[in-house]
Length: 284
Image (tube, rainbow, N blue to C red; front, top):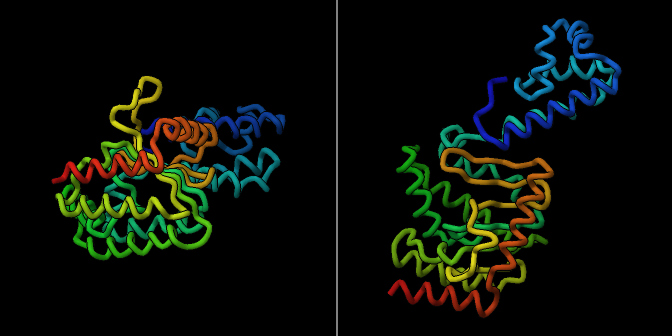
């Protein structure tokens, strides 16, 4: 395994995983020195693995589990380690084969999730974007990151993905900052169409739309990075340089709590429609 990219979330996950390894070893009655001797390792390797300062190979994990008398835990531990490896993925790695492949890579979690909680401070989120808005966004990403030109294929994948808004038991709770209604993506015509579409999808039984007004008192909780919560299993965060996947329970709880607090600051129903209408009027 290669050394993971720098990320506080990944570092925390590594430390937590190392802590679990240490608990397994202690429960087995082995000292770090005894385990290292059995495994044929330098004693410092065992220490580094348990501190989370050194990512274990899958072979290391199997050896660790076997000598601690819990070989049945090896596959579970390997799955956890593999998940940590995929937590922080640079855009250049995720999009190296193009935007279409990147869009397709997230389809499995989108299709199996039932409850979506989405917060965005600067963009209208994917499930409720218009085709023109999607095209403008992906074209900008292609040009900015100097990617291959598969924008139209990627647009089709994202538009097709929106069927989950209308089908099955999927439920979407979406919280937007009012600023997201004002940033002009794709020009005036594209934004007018997007805002009109937002008024329409807000009436769907599967969608709850809240908008936090610019004039709201944000002393208690100010705008944060945009994030997607998929059931209670995973959060996705889009950073400038990378795509972050959060799976640690305590971190998921923080995002869930933050979403609930943001939701309390939002306007719904007629209040949300009025904010969208004002944003449409501002385009003229």
